[in-house]
Image 1: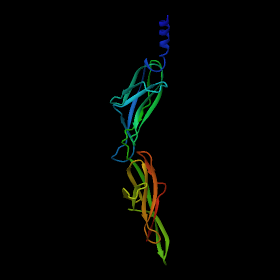
Image 2 (image 1 turned 90 degrees about the vertical axis):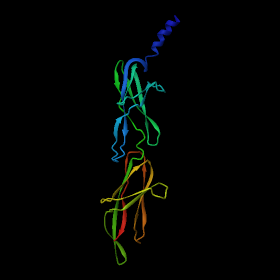
Image 3 (image 1 turned 45 degrees about the horizontal axis):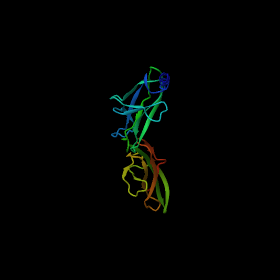
Image 4 (image 1 turned 120 degrees about the vertical axis):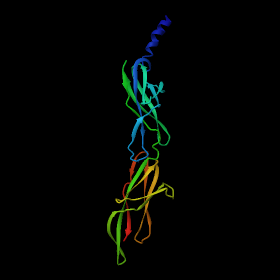
Length: 233
């Protein structure tokens, strides 16, 4: 009698999410690729082949199974009972840290449920951000020993520098275009100082600088305001 009672109880304990059913959870994993040859920073995607995907049954604290994606980035978890499931794959940040990218679905008896696509990164977007800015020129003329403002326009072919915050030496420089605009490309996350040189009323050079924080890879950052340099005519 005890064995009969145990046999009746055991099946009732296995009706939650997990293996032993006829349902399927499936989906795709896509790898976000940041091209490094044109710096457009328009992300492209490709199939994430041979990527481990994990599944959690219900609200369990640990994953119950894992599979590997095929050449097309597709994965399947078969023979599942009805219930809630969470699938996840690991994405690598530019810093090298791995984080889980997950989606949750509800599976009905004997059905196939498609999980929203999981988009992951491989960490290779490190050093793909751009910082843009502009330099304007304020022109002054001297009359009877006094400087007077004359006009203003884009500063063409003016040199701009970039250095890491807290450092004295710059690691790159560029020149402005005909519209006074400039850009520093392929920057990894970090704190930077952008600076340029201007004249003053005594015709001595001085520095103008702005700070910018590059927080994520593959982004375009604009300086808050243009540099306005002084040019004595």
